[in-house]
Length: 123
Image (cartoon, rainbow, N blue to C red; front, top):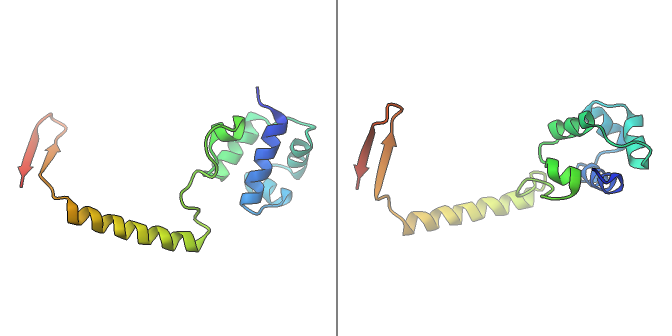
């Protein structure tokens, strides 16, 4: 069973993360503003349809995290809306690729075909 109070806190966290008001959040997921208001106030519990609309509109939200707090939010690394993190990530990727290229060489490549045969290419 979903703990409505905890669900409400996670819903507010999602709205804050995306910098959405109740009205804009309701519009984005395709529900009435009163639905958001009633869930946030504790008057109503979220329906399955409501939860599925959140997941389809915000793919970074994990189902298990939203329902019971287990898992991660946001489910992205690094957050796409922070340019400084993107720059740092690209720099790390370059360093990582360079490190892999200098330390590792390809020993062999095996190609498997749908008929069960394969071709082995060795260095």
